[in-house]
Length: 398
Image 1 (tube, rainbow, N blue to C red):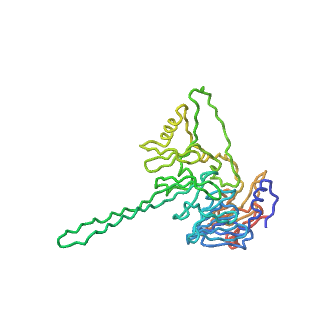
Image 2 (image 1 turned 135 degrees about the vertical axis):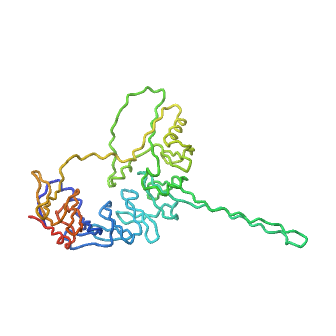
Image 3 (image 1 turned 180 degrees about the horizontal axis):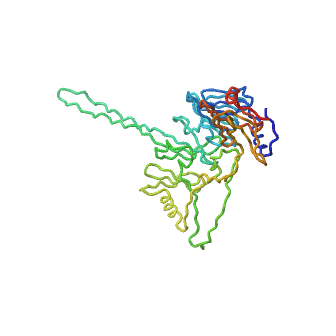
């Protein structure tokens, strides 16, 4: 095993990987896990992976199942469907799970199972997602069956001298399926806050709040107040620990929201209660809300801005030199990491192609076979099966 004295920049990753035993690799189109020595390997019909879970990894299989693997113990659990990081409740993530016909929320930290909210428990494919730290939501549908019409009976039998009364067949109305937006408190019991009829297209929306809600902040000042000079304030976003990066909106708030119902717009307050239903009539959501709020606050100047439920632009990292390098030397590649005075070679590999993308090494041999994996920061080991290490003649340089 290669051992080197590394700079303090490795301290944090070492702590993060201290308990991790298994590491992800990909060979051609197959995924697997290996320990640092390459002797303990976990394989399956894994065709895709997700590493967005703490101390765990999620695989899709050819059998259209989801397999959750603990990276410390190697324990595996199989689900019909596993939607990771669906809601963040009591400082931990829960996944929407389908398991042998049962639907529930699964704690990604403890394995605890929570029942779906009562309002959607008996629906087809019930799922719950997160608006922010205060509210959860679900899209569902309910079928309304009309009353069965009464069949009128003839009062007397027909006779030769009396023409029988012709009773028309009763009219049967078809059942109607309506789509609803269910809003719950982000609490363990998930009490229902609102049930709002919405456009049926919402049933095919994504899992992000912006695909369901139009969310705004309201700015109002009395009309008789003197105009102030414009001030630009840069406010740093709050960040709850333990969240995945794309759940930046968890700590955000809003003043007014809107959802569509065919040709109407439901206007909601900050508690997600319906304030008004307004006909759209070829108007934008912003125009409808602005006119509504102007009539609601006639003595104020009104302004609307999008609530912070959109990702902030990423800052450029500039032309910073990469930490890892793969250098072509004759018939092989030498792998190196950056030091204060240059790059230090630590391994060699026989491959047709070799490159680092971040801390992931990608290799391709002369036959077109591909291999990719991430370095183990704590030991600088190559956590791949032994046979793959031998196939690519991956060796350490002391």
